Length: 472
Image (cartoon, rainbow, N blue to C red; front, top):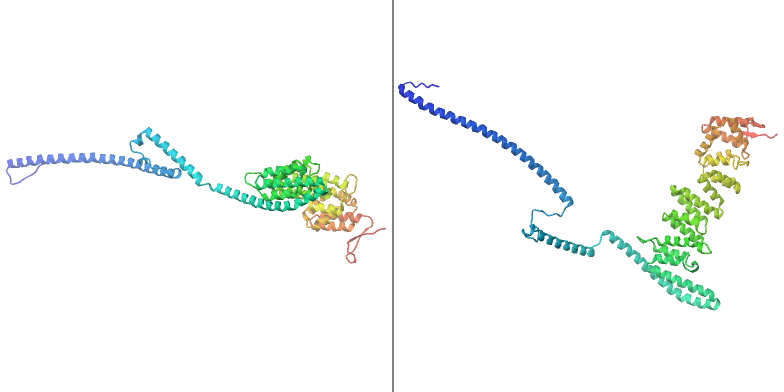
């Protein structure tokens, strides 16, 4: 680079140019140095920014982990302390001393045990309170029962004392029995008042000659009710007296038998009832059979078992209609037919049976010959009855079965029916036509026309029946 300075001598120009050029070179050098420093600082700045980004990411992750940890700590350790704070009751030196920490831990454990013991004495769980309330009700019930028994005993003592004196004069043996009864009753009442229900039950069951096996004892145990965690006294009473009934010459009476069965079923103890009915010495009644029969209608899983038990009771009581119903409901149709042949049943009885147990197989057996004997019921009358008592579905099903056969089978079926008139068969044919069994209806009408002595009557005739049988 050259600078031109007019007006100056050449030597001065040279000196000026020489001094300015040196400074210029120096300035250029400085600028280049700064440019190098700028580049270096830019690189350092980028490096710092990269490091800062990485650190910020690490900080964010740590914050996230801390939040998650705090949430878990709140969830599982609600009362946890900040570990960075000093331990209460210990100096900084003691908090890093293992022996001091062990001693302090022992002190805290003892204090915790003491507080826990105090809380267990002053406070009880809500469930325990409910149990105590239930026990209190039971105690109050026993108190009321004891008071009533006390009044009753006081009254009986005054009256029975005179009765015993009179019996002693008349019959010393009866007086002895009366004294035993009074003594046993007083002991039983005492056990009830003390809440010793199991002892009271066993005492009554094993009383001399079973004198406490009566409805009076049953009613007292029924009044006690249930106690949580203990056997139901009333059910235990029936279990005990039924199991020991074989030891006495006289079986348990019908009323106690009925009440025992009711109690067992109400407690869902069908297993006990099965054992009582099949093994023990009881007195059966129609009511007892009905209770088991009705229970089976509600408990479909055990229905067949209940029907078998009810059948045993009905059979013992000679209730043949109900025995027959149990057989049919169990699906023992052949057994039911044999039972019908063994005992006399009216057509009304069998019609009622069909209504209560409308099995197709049963109806077919009743309307056909059985072991060479004529049908018990008329098929046509059964059909007419079913359609008249709103059992159309059963009637249609029977017609479907008949419709499967040929005309010869239908004719044989009609000829073997000794109970039904031709007019009734005409009604059956009309029912078949109304329910879509055209072929069967035509077959019946054709068979009716082919019978000797049957003539068709015109609509103008003042006769109710469309067909009449003309006797020659």
